[in-house]
Length: 199
Length: 199
Image (cartoon, rainbow over all chains, first blue to last red; front, side, top):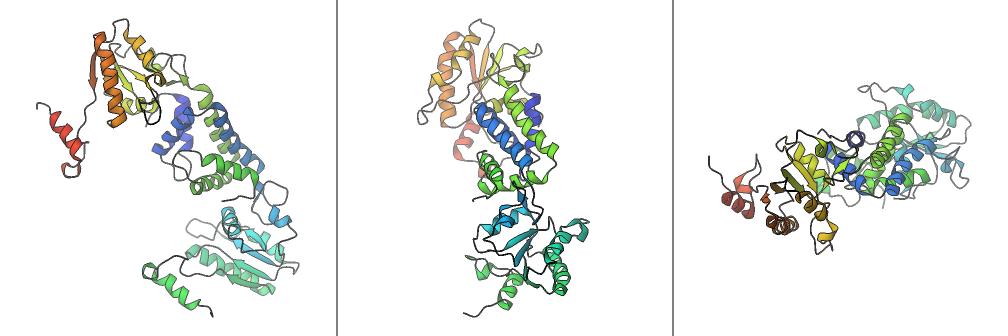
């Protein structure tokens, strides 16, 4: 989809690198931006650049932060004896939206994946073990995705952490709220049965 | 979907203003960007800003250009006696991709729409009539969309231009190439019949 206007072609090219954006959507966005007021376009460009410039990795939990230590790690209101381990920074935001969890987080930045050549050294596991060394943490909840790689990572971490005398738990698998038994796959249904709780 | 990191929240907010981007996609894009290298993110932000800063409206055809007059208007290879009228700047790119049209363009920047309070004065019609005044142009092809507003605009322009002694034509309506008679709506099928051509 060649564009004769160079600045427009390069904008479409850059936008189409975004996840889920094909060349059609990129082109639509580009023409939309050219129709907007200059200050609105500048605000978008600035927001992109400022976010990248300001947001760093929290040295404690390895999640994103725009302060030296992230607000969750720095908070005195959060429990320090329980850490929830997630694969990606975005998973922290997803769990925070539930308002269910009062502990702290640890972000692995990926999961073990022999296929994509991602081993234990590529994840922030060393940093997690360091946080467990002083005996403050009593439970580690492993909240990686319930897929093959997420499960393998959970098992790997459990084997590593249990000998330290720390309890290791896994988030529950089951039927999503609002889901339908009839349309739930067998594996999930099996997990929902074996993970049943007293009422 | 509250985000506790301010720079991230404002990035997600800005991205979700883009057409076709909801808060989920915006959030996905934002986290994706934070995972990219700093220079790649800068390139995107720059591309957005540069496109907006460099691209202006061509004073002749009213399409987008990054030169004083757009490359099509300035080209000596393009026929000056035929103008194709489109509603939006992006339509020029769509028609150029066909490599079928050798004339010049005129962009209206919208279509007549009583519902959205867009009248003839809001479109670049005056600029079109000015281009027809010196007698160079012999044919005006009206390539607005084949919907109610596009048709109304086409009729309005035809009534305005014909008295100037300029031939006015309309792009053909019919079954899209690769389309299926069985699944074509009656109006399109009717147009395809009445617009039939000698083989």
